[in-house]
Image (tube, rainbow, N blue to C red; front, side):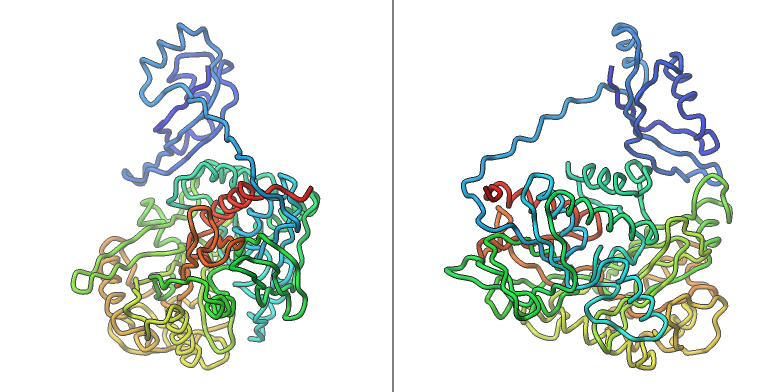
Length: 533
C-alpha cells in the first residue's frame, strides 16, 4: 500500500537512521518499506539546542492489507496516498502560423519555453543579456572595476535575477506545478534535497549550470535561444500581436508571445505604456541589507554557534508599525553569504544578497525592508513606482561616491543617527563601501519605521542591532512596482496574443512562483493555440 506520513519527528542526530526509526515506529521489518520519498523536511528548534527534523514522507509498505489497516489506525499522521486526477488538456481552437516567442530567459521565461518545447511548440526565446557563462564574466567585471553593462548584469541575462542571488526556492503559493519546477531543477543538476526541504535553495554556483542545462533541453526539443536579442517593440494590428521587434531593426512574426521580462526592465514598461497597454501601479518594499556573524544567528536559532547536523541558520522577522500602518520584514535571507552590487542602470546603487550552495562565508545577510504604497510615489502615473526606485538608487549612488560603492553604517550608528568609520565586522558588499548616514538615502517614513523595527528585532534575536551588525544600502528591487494587467486566459487585456508572466508582469515573487507562473501561462497559450502543423 502507498502511504503518506506527516509530522514524523526525528532528532537530527538520528536522521541517518530514518528508515530504521520508521520501521520501529510502524513495527514492521525495515525491508518492507520501499520507494521512500521525502515530500518535506523542516527543522523544529523550539527546544534548542535539542533539534529535530519534522518529515512528510511518501512510501510503499509491503504488508498484508489487514496488517496495513491496523497500522493506519494506530499510527498518528499516517494515511493512504490519494490518487491524483490526470490533467486533461483542452483542444485548442486555433493553430499557430509562427512559432511562439518567449521574451526573457529568467525562471518564468525558461519554464514557459520548456513547457512549450516539451509539447512540440519549438519556441523562440529572446534574451536581452548574455548566456550565463558570458554573463558571469560581465558581472565579475562590474564588481571588480565598476564598469556596468546595462544589458548583461545581475538583473539581466540568462537565468534572471535569481541566478546571482541564493537560488532560494521558498514560496508561499500552493500550486500543483511546484513539484514540476523542483523536479526539473533536479533533473538539470540541482541537489535532490530541494524537493523536500522546507526552505530549499540551490546556490548561485550550482544554479548557473542548471539554467544552462535547461537551455540545452529547450534546444534539443526544437526550441531556439538567442542572446543579445533585446525586444525593443511590438507590432500590432486590430489589438492583436503580429510581430516582435528585436534590437530596433529585426521583425519576427508572432501571433503569440510570452512576456517574461523580470522586474527591472524599465525600458520595456515604458514602451508598453506608450502602446497603451493596461499597466497598474503596485506596492512593493524598500530598505537596506543587514549583515551579522553567522555564529550569532546560529546561537539564537539553534542554541549553539555551530551545529554539526544542520547547516547555517536563517530567520524570518516581521514588524507592524502601529503609527504608520507600514510593515517591515526580513526578505531574501542569505545564510553564509555576502552582499553584492546589483545595479542595471547607470547612476544607481542596488544591493542584493548572494550565497553559494555550501553557504560557508560565516556571514549572514538579509534585506530589512519597509512597505511602500502607491501614495508614496511622486505622481499618479502608472510608471511612478519606477521613478521612485530610481530616485533612491541614485541617492545611494551619490552617497557611495558615484563609483558603485555603497553607503554603509553600523546598526548601532544608524539607530543613533551618527557616522563613523568603525566597523567591528567589515561589510561584505562588493565592490566596496563608504560610511554614510543611511537615513539620508531612505524616504523619511521608511527610515523611521526601519529604526523602530530594528529595535524590535533586537529583542527577538539577541545582538541583531548590536555592534557587529552592519547595514548597506539600498534595497529597492524586492518586487515589480507595476502589474501588466491580464485576463483570465493569461493574455494582456489590451493586446491579444501577448501573455505577461512572472515577476515582471507583477504576478510572482521569487524563482519558484515565477517558474510556476511561466508554466501556467504556457498552458494558457497551448489551450488557445495548437503548434504549427
